[in-house]
Length: 492
Image (cartoon, rainbow, N blue to C red):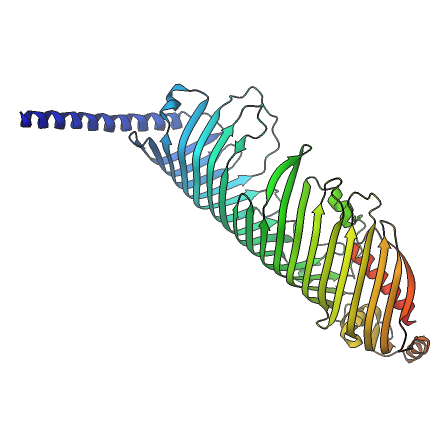
């Protein structure tokens, strides 16, 4: 009897195993036929398809995808597991436990926006988890620019819902995300690239390291590719942290929010060739630029930590460009926003100017003020005059000596004009005026200038200033004009 039962059990197991194998083969064959009969805009080549009805898993290996729009992808492995039995009884609702994608390379290009077809088939897919590993992506946005590139992408999405019903605002939703990627390259224009060495993000936190903006050409080579004054930029940032990040909607606009954004150890160098013609394009102040963003922005607190700024201008062909440098830059910015009624943006900057002088600036503006009113309150202490010669000598044909003990300024300004006060205290301050285009002292004008300088060491010199804005130049040019006007009125 025992042998008989064993034989029956063995026979049942053998039959079941055979049925499972046959079923797997039939399902595999069915899937391969469906892929071969596919008449969509995408074609598929797959070297290996395996199914397992016990685990409800389908595995595709060495997948190659081509589209009629020239997009393509190659994927070493795609595994769909935990396919719900209920899928057999539903045409529009599907449930899957997990989709796993490994070692993919995708090549995509920008398409013209297609009109939404309300007659398209509506369906809903629930996926417990999507995981992507070791995948690279290249996305062409324009013919004349390099593609966006992202390497070693890793993504885990949980509780994913894809719903194509036209009544649903969000087609793609998920509960949790963990994203990692490396070597991200994003072309800004034909001569600037934005780069991120590594990024890690979840639904509320982002950390990016080795961030930068790079000009693709050398300072000299860039001049061959532009027709007007164009900034040569080299920016390196050690890391950026964004905390409690959210992406929502506000009055039919995309809304990007964050509680805190921190920038660690930024180092930016900007070079401008002033020998080229000036651009004629209007440049808005920051309040207007924020107000006119195509999306909504709300960052409660931004902090810049231990950073450096170098700015250089070339005004003559035969000399080195003039430089100014800010080091140990630490700044806090409260309430960066483009939202109506959200109040003032407040900026505080502390740094060393030319590696020595203490510099502090308080800067307030409100994006809701259509006149773009803003205030500046600043001071600088203990600047040796010879330290600014690298900038003023090539730019103004002037060499200085002595000591600037303090500068205090207050400015109230708008889109058109700036008014304020400028107070300067200096000690034995002298200027040497050089002949134009020559490294030779103009003794006559030097003696006249020093004769009229107000060298009273005991009193502060305070003057009122008024400056009109050049709207084809930046906010920083506006700021510089205020400082220059105050300095000229004070020392001469």
